[in-house]
Image 1 (spheres, rainbow, N blue to C red):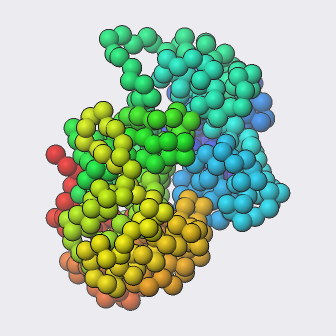
Image 2 (tube, helix red, strand yellow):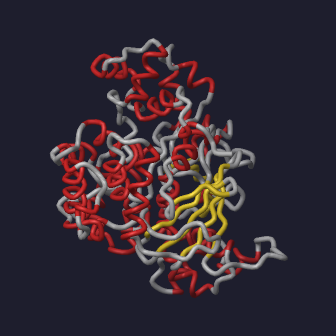
Image 3 (cartoon, rainbow, N blue to C red):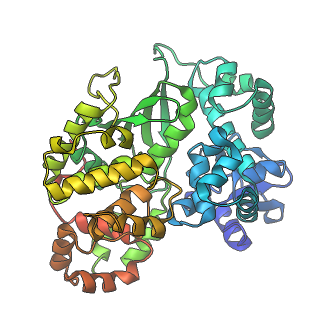
Length: 490
């Protein structure tokens, strides 16, 4: 979008928050870059130039605005609605792969050469993977500086910097303030005791956001010991690269309140990225709803409760296992099956609030279990054991970098995997915004009630007009039912 100068200028002059994260405005006279909705008086159009990423602004010598804090804007929705090389690379960078494995590790995960990855990122985002990861480290550093009392040396390494000097230089360059000056600008808090490793954050999103089906789905399908709904928040355990964590996510009118407790602060960036992905916070609801509203039979559903998101996952392999456990059984039965696996094979964790007890068991642990202990039909045992064995040995990989079409084909080749299981994994684990479930009983009921075609083939043909947002149409169709997944828990 940053190449459409006229459109960008209009967005800046109208302070349109819908475009935050889509592009960044750099002001030539002040050498500052802002989000489109920056509250200051817009600069003259001749003094504006536009970039596709914060990293590109920083590489061009601009520093972040202290007023609108462009580093805290929602991420671009582009990376969650595409499955090409650039989008997959951006999802991996957000997941901290460059900080852990370097650019060669990023390229290896994508199956391309380092040169090809760098060339395509530079062409589309104006910055290579190192610069994009550096911008992310700067954002994490600022967050730790402003929300924790940690010494600067600890913050430097927790944010992913290789040295304190690099940390100091980057913070000064990006924010035009020394780390200690950033901390001095934060109002002092009194009367609150800090919990080691605990952080309270605000996760931004593009309005509108309807939390009903989003949190309703997560709460209604929560696996005891791993997930729970408590005091108006969805809580769950997280398996992270350096340790584990516990997160509490609660909807607010203009943000998601996020409380994170981490065993290792180096996991902060990854934990935030996975929470944003879980709640689909980087979606563009206006674009989605406008497309779906064009269908006169869907329009009343969209107008009644706009801004529905697709509830996703923090662990793709975990969701695939749970999808198999949920085949042809009720939501309650699926939770019971999963809870038994958690108790028997999950790693215990300590929860200060006492409700969560385990991490969901990884494929390696599940691949070692005795199939005869599974209380399910023999054919589903075969489906389950084949899935976890292939996930454990790496012959099947599910991750943010997965190619959607290729992974669908691989899943369809497994015993017991039909279109419904594959599409629900594509929708909620892989993040495909166009995944569709025409054979789902709830979808067929909703279609019949609304006057849409109720046979899978006819409904799929009608749904072609909803592309590329059919996964969101699924949420609106499901919402016609009285199932608990559609209601925010009380």
